[in-house]
Image (cartoon, rainbow, N blue to C red):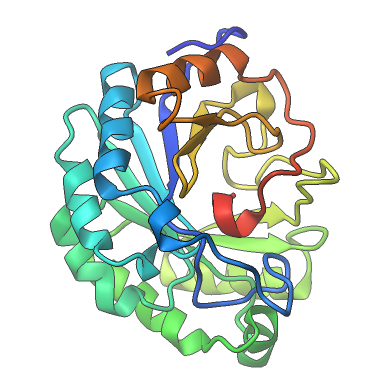
Length: 266
């Protein structure tokens, strides 16, 4: 699929839930958020319809995000459903790693290819503070299980305040080098303020080569993270939402006041 700026779109990111088992300081307020009622969350069957239509029109790469995708009941079943769609050649997941020890092998068996794991520090106390209560050892165990299950290459997403030369970021880089992991440094973004940059070690944030659409957990297809544009696959129909998203995909991201990171998956 080509948008009006001749960019080939082949990547669909799917937020399967807005719920999470952590409360990271840069993602959620301390008091928490009001989550979407379960009856408004897109079903697996509806997600599959969106994936199938995309696959018939050039989508070959799918990533499952959240919230935290592993808190969505039946997530392994969804992975299997998507993995069986013809022409989907790259199926990945971004996770905080807390539940990965339990799910790594079942996910691999279901057809997941690889994972990105969020890790902003290797200091246990800093991790507990950033995530408001998380245990870093759960993440380490999850990464080990992902390695064993063959969910590789494992990429580590490290959010930084300014650069990869911060102390926590350097420690994460050292850990990744030791463990044979790939690290990506993501500068802290501001959706409403329109602050974002190209991911260091990745492809995100470069508007000139943007190849992605996003499906949020209520079934809205979004052509750009930093835009208020959103097209409901339920009211517009799947084909209609795709057509509108491709026709209206902006040349550059600006701001977004209608989503937060916890419900769009970054």
